Amino acid sequence: MGSPSPPQPHALVLPFPLQGHIIPLMELSHRLVDHGFSVTFVNTHFNHARILDSLPGPRAKTAPLRLVSVPDGLEPGVDRNDIGRLTLTISEHMPGHLEELIRASSTKSKRGPVTCIIADHSMAWALDIARKMCLRAAAFWPGSAAMLMTILSSPNMIDDGTIDANGVPTEHRMIRLGPEMLPMNTAHFWWNHLGGPITGRIVFDSMMRGNKSIETVEWVLCNSFAYAEHPLFNHAPRICPIGPLLPGLKLDRPIGLYWPEDSSCEEWLDRQPLKSVVYVAFGSLTVFDQRQFEELALGLEIMGRQFLWVVRPDLTKADHTTFLGCFEERMAGRGRMVGWSPQQRVLAHPSVACFVSHCGWNSTMEGVTNGVPFLCWPYFADQFLNESYICDSWKVGLRLCRDAGGFITKEEIKTKVEALLGDREVVGRALELKEMAEVSIAEGGSSYNNLNEFIESMKTYV
Ligand code: UDP
Image (tube, rainbow, N blue to C red; front, side, top):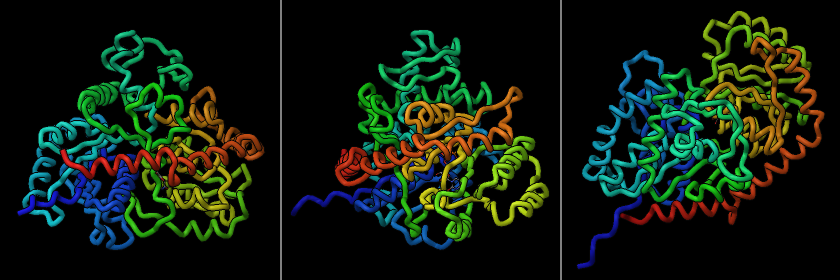
């Protein structure tokens, strides 16, 4: 009698429950499915419901990618954007549910047992579960490699006095994590920009524990590409870039969005002249103060160009419907507002001239891959670091500068849009960087090869 055939590769994929983490991990899951894997994609109950509600059809039920959910430990109605609290309850409540899910896959699942775990670095406790249950494992970082390197370098930075044991910089100054690397302002360490010192400390502690969990893991992946962050990968050879991970223009598979896309703006874009539209979007988390929100609207009004502006229902704390109603009437014909756009397709549209962005990493990679120049308006987390990449390293965008009161004025918006669109060098470099991104993900490119090597290695068993 021959030995029993090995089980089919079955990956359990676990994102941190934020939009910018779910989207690239869902894309990675689709790539695994394309290579013959079954995938069990684990969301929190809260996000699972939002994602299913936002699907235009019953795609999730039929896809080989199975969406499942576990509780995040927070009561209904509690603010899920409180990242510190979420980090704590998740690490307390989720591990037990995850182990249960994995055990159940050995006995109940038609797909066979889970054979590997791919966990967000922010959920690195799951890698300890993989070790305990003898499964293959990989850590995934949805941001820049530089952002990951700051956390991997934290023990050294504590030793040399750059930060204290809570991750707080002892002084604000420019540093480099390695020779020729992007200079960073210690004031911009991302964990200190997540909503206050307590949150910063919780996340920093969790990341330091994560560093230990990834020590023995074979793969530490990130959603970046070698050219974009060279020479970082020479200094941190464990970090393996496999990006930009983008679904491209495919419409037939779930990408894990929280809000339904309003694709009517694509027809509107079709009617606009080539490279005429200023696209304005701030990701899934940014919340505007009402005065700044209105100043942005007035900036779009006085700039006198076509624009497409994503106004999420929760973009401001106050009710902005009356203001927006009047604004929309004044802007009819020239401006278009949507609650949530099909951003990746919008950025690929030939009518789009530039991207006013909060510089979230996914938005950054999406703008880069489409050769769209940026106007940077960072708010928190890693966005200041990403702005430095865009403006100082790649030179594919300009900063929007705040006035003495911390506001970006309507005049600043108008002036910088004109400056950006008139700057042939920036526009040209954006196209060059797009080519480099394309080369890295095309057959034979560095990200393409890394991704394939990773996928093949995950098909074998511990
Ligand atoms: N996004 C989108 N439609 C929108 C705004 C954003 O599909 O109207 C997507 C965007 O394409 C990106 C993600 O939401 O993939 C936001 O991630 P990012 O890292 O840029 O920002 P975050 O939401 O984490 O701040």
